[in-house]
Length: 554
Image (cartoon, rainbow, N blue to C red; front, side, top):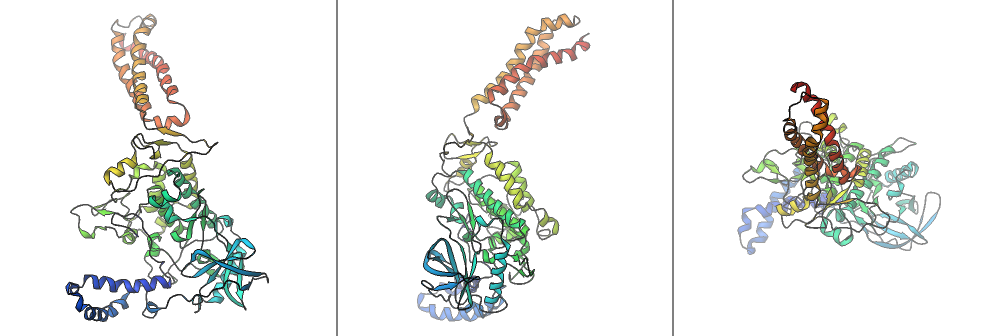
């Protein structure tokens, strides 16, 4: 899942799938051969070494958590070309299968176009899928029919079944909306591939993608549906930031009529909540996906989108730290609650090139903390699970973040970041790790779209605010002293000097406060109005101060 620096990379096969089981069964053998002392021998001894290692590894593979010896030698998927065949729907509707969709083949089936229906497609299962009870073709037939009765309000963001397909009475797949011109969220998270797909996108567009993904999951949860396996290969994004989820037949649902529960039995390890990480087999009854487990996976995706594709649970070790401090073991860190952006322990640090967590507004950081702040002891506690930020809360917060003003870096105009940052966080990340991918390039806002982008060159405005505050106090005391003395004859002639010193200090403090709050005051009124208010209020504050000093002088 991650390179040496903790950046998200192509994911492993989903846990619980037959493809994952075959690959995982091979992985221990490769590791053992790699670290075997016999590897130092010449290539002529390779055959003997291989036989010797295979004998040892046959015992080692028996202790795999999820695998069994039978399933580790399963053959490749048995496919059948359905192009040109006519399939029947649940109501007798006939569908003629067209050509296979390019890139539409996965571990469970293949996607075809439907002739005469340009907006629909058919997902046809491989011949060797869903052939053994309890999850056989009859089971999937019941589940797909239950999905037809659900009608989720987020149907526009889902490749939701429209009809079930049969060939001579045997269920072979289902009809769904055809997904066009969309890209996997994995390619959207990665800066290098994103620049090729959407060269005009900015950081704000990634906020929009995160917001739309949150909205999609919030609508699912409102309808009692749990996505379960939020695999990056099943989340698609278009050029407008719209999000669509595919492979919805793996969702965790309940039939609204019969109340039969159809659990999700697959998952992506790097995205699973800790209570699911502890389950050895996602097909077991102990594996219970929920809206809260979806919220955990959602928070990881939002972190990847906002933090330049850095995983919240990937880290590096401080030099000299013991090897048991976590390193890049993202799955183990999820179990232990070791999010280095919130809690650094055991010599772990964020990966090089990762932007500072302070890049994000405080409100967003608090939402991440609600989800990722737990320990190994409390990871699966009810309190920690209930505290996770919901998809609806994320949607509200990200919608507000999308409307917030941005700053543009003076050194690199392609760097945009939230306005509360006084320095460019992308430049700081590049300085920490020069080979790290830069922030997204700038975009040209379409006509009619109002978007505030604040220049980073604000030091003249800040200096003006500070000087205006101090000058207002210094100018007010001498000119108003005569009028004040007429009101309070007991005051000493040395009063102007007494008032000028604290007045100037208070004026400078007020000006500094306005300068520090410039990014926030910019939202409600311009800087020049704030500076003018400081100058106008200075004489009134001098009068107030003189009123307090007059009795003491008398």
